[in-house]
Image (cartoon, rainbow, N blue to C red; front, top):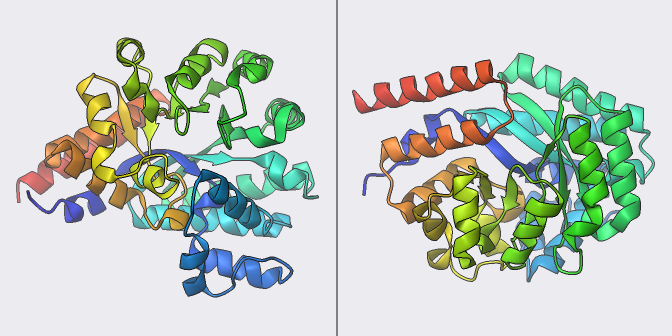
Length: 341
């Protein structure tokens, strides 16, 4: 097969499933760790590779929360957010919906207004400097229970930043039933936010059904266990409900044992709209360009097929129609020029 890495590197892209803290590069993590020496996170960027070697999903959550603890001031939040956009620009990511867990920061003492001001200032500065359009998904950290859900909803509704477009649910799935959060998602949707909970990453298709029926999910974070249920795949395909698939993440957290066994082929073959994403890229030693290359190999795509993946992400995004048209035109123009070489 043709080496698609050069094509992918220049391809204009959208990313829909990528976490705020999980996008902190080793350079930024080490800088934050140096600011806060009481943390157990290594300050040496090279040592971070070993620190980010996960034994299972529970271990990943522990490590992730230790990095969350490095965000102790609004300046830390602003730095992280702006630098994420810089890294995205290097990959030709034009639009991204960044999942943020505000509860994790406000409960650590960052004033809510200062937190919102920090992410919004970074968003506007990044768009002006890098041309990257950022939007926010505020997610409930499921492991923190209903208290976190109540507070996340309050922040999303009452202290709503301009860039907020969706409401999510992250953290572990095992032991965190989706239906308990139904009232929170009902209120968020009533307030005009889109529903994008995680489901079906480390649990079976029943969790995805719960997200659809109880949480009114418009997109599913991960959702890979849907491949185990033909009826569910047919429902997702018929209703054009996208999955936010993150191949390398699934391997890193042991949700999938071998990349060759990844269910992305089954999902695509069933007509499900699959978007490709990086989840927590530096923690998993990847980026969106690499995820596109992995998906292209698994799905046996050529340049047009990869461009189709990119346009699928645009379709599944919450970008306004004018923005979707612009980005789709960019993808088409780039692809046509590449193939004409």
